[in-house]
Amino acid sequence: MRKVFAIVAIVAAMFVAGKVQAQSTIYATYAPETFVAGSNNTNYQGFSIGFSQNIGLYKGFGVAVGAQFRMNMRSATQTIWGFTGTVKETQTLIDVPILFNYKIAVNRDIAIIPFVGPMPSLALTGTTKGVDPIFGENSSNWYNDNSTYSRLNLYAVFGADLKFSKFNLFGGYRLGLLDLNKSDNVSLKTNGFFVGLGFTL
Image (cartoon, rainbow, N blue to C red):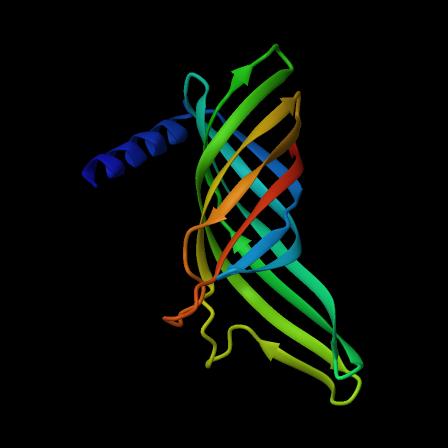
């Protein structure tokens, strides 16, 4: 633990002294997500916008730290006893990716940058809204006081960025590591790929 604090202190001191180069990037992604509950998979469309700052550490190695707002959405129809209704689900989250990376320069303008790291995630909202031809509209909150859903998740993230001048085309995969259902006999985990476009300021 002392070594970790020492490394953080050295990086912070170098950053303050101006010896660490930092690059800021804004980006948007297409990031669908799959909710896995036992043998049942539920697929959501997903999108995010974010900001990151990559701090150069040593000879091509860096760490990118940032934050992104992400949204998962799903719409489906259900038919019961001959009556068809609709279900719409929406979840919003804040992610904090911490991605270690290595820049492989192809030439002055083009570089390939593989990355890997953890991404803590906090769900802000989660709602299910149904429209039934008999009972009308109804809605439920995923995170009310009686809910068994957990707001906090932790992902393992890996992928690669193709950087051309100030433009970034990147993609990868995120794997949820935590069980998001607090119930003992039910397991719920998430995963999904992502592709995005970014611009380095």
